[in-house]
Length: 380
Ligand SMILES: *Cc1c(COP(=O)(O)O)cnc(C)c1O
Image (cartoon, protein in one colour):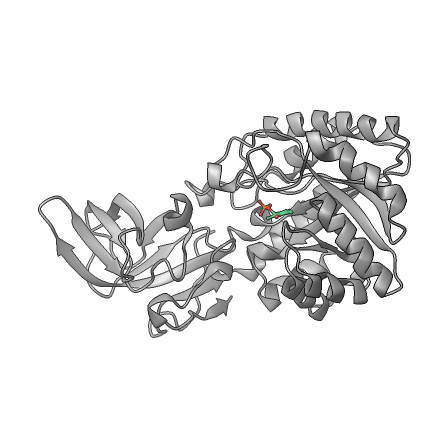
């Protein structure tokens, strides 16, 4: 299906984020249809996109919420997610954030260090509560994705490393205000090699045995998120292959009787439904290259500057013969470049140019650098 534009797009000021809620609905339904029969619970990672219409649809489809800040916990609760469907992860939760989440009685804290466990116990005790905890382990599994979005290697700051795990679990008997309910791993994002998830399952099975040998029962296994999307050719796969993804966990996780399995998907649910719409401000040529200068920049979509990531760029206004352009934004940074030597039909001032697959880690990362206005969201 071609890109759905709002009826008044020709006169609408740019840049803006465009969200196709019908595609979002179909994506959520596909994920739910793959997860539910396998009895796998999906928590949506709010950090990918926390817009209210997006959250409302996610909640309506029966997903929980995976939050990485106190404000995300609050946003999830405001969007109507039940506290018992909210998990709180993050390598640096502040006391204030923990206190708010405790007061809301969220389902689970994914704890990333021994010190955090001790602090959580103290804060829960002060509120006369018992916090449910999953230990986030660093399984040292290579996600084979960009190194800036790899989180499960021992060089990364996330999770509890295997050498420290025994010391952390040894703390538990002396901490009456935390209750271990499971283990959690999340090894990275934009994972397109599904074999990585197979390796992850084998590691989780080993980790589960490690706990059981020490007498811990784990009612919950949370295997994190990370399923990738097709940035190169979004129209070839607008909806990721959730069947293939969930079937790996169904096949390979050694699930104990009554044990619940959770995944935390962000990008794969919302990336394709979002598009950044901009106009060409100027064309300019240097000795080496021809620049198309857009009115959108890294302030609206920082992924190319931050992780050298690729977004498909399309000119919706021109049918001319193709030429190569360096497509750049107006921000005073050389890294404010969306793509180099991008083939586009002959492009002129005023043309509508879109960056596809911008629904995840796009608008949520917007900044006001150069004192720019935040771009609005439009829903179709
Ligand atoms: C970011 C994040 C996710 C979601 O990752 P995606 O790649 O967007 O699916 C899940 N769990 C945790 C703990 C995260 O930090």
